[in-house]
Every structure is written in C-alpha cells, then in structure tokens.
Length: 156
Image (tube, rainbow, N blue to C red):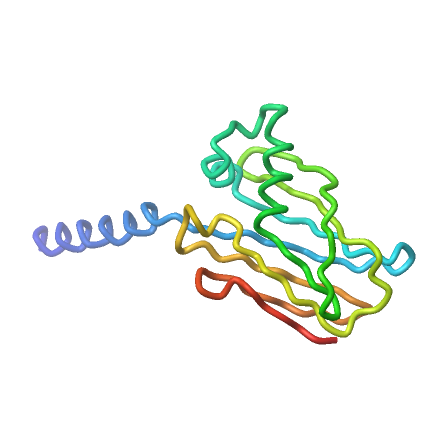
C-alpha cells in the first residue's frame, strides 16, 4: 500500500512540475473606437519580463518607454478599409509582472474592415499568442495571432 501511495505521489509531483515549468506567452489588446474623436485606441497588456527580455532593457528605466514605442511601430500595423493607419504611441505603464502599452490611430471616420499585423514577441517566443478584441459601435470582434498567422482581418 505504501508503495502505491509513493508511486501516486511521484506521479502527481511530476504532473504538477510540468505545469510549473511551462511558461505561457501571450498578450491581450483591447481596441476601442471613440466616435467623437474618430480614433481607434489600443491598450496592450504584456508580460513585463518577456518584453524586457526582447528589448534587453529594464522596464523600470526611463529608456524603456522609447524602446517600447519603437518596438510597437515595428511589430504592429493597422489597416482600416484597406488604408494603412499611422500609430501614435501615447504611453506605457509597468506594474509588477504587467506592462501596458497605449497607442492610437486617428482619422478613422467609419470602419467596414480592419486588418491588423501583430507579431509582438514572436521572435523570442515561438509559442507566443496575441489576442485582440475590437469594439466598434456596439459590435465586438476578436482576432488571434500566432507565429505563421501574423495577419488577421475582420469586417463590420
């Protein structure tokens, strides 16, 4: 009986260790359309350790924000109704394990389609998954980005 309990305990230990050792790589972006200013506002939540590894900079330093701005501009593209929109970086905030990055696209009068390229952190983490939720005039659309599927498009 003790031998069976020991085997079960070892098995449970190995199973629990497999969950601890596997890291989850993801980002979450919320996109809100602000009709009054004709702007798409983006809020991206990242793991601060993961983004600091990619940028090779401590997220608590003042240079972090400038590096995040460059990184976002190189890894996110937004097309509204087939036209590329310039992204304006509006800030970042680091709180423990989370880094928030804020940017926007202005001059968006009406949306029939949005195409986004999002390959944030793919170069460092092949299992990275980026989720994007878009809210436009009461409608919600979702996108999922993975290595090999860096571009998505939705219609409204």
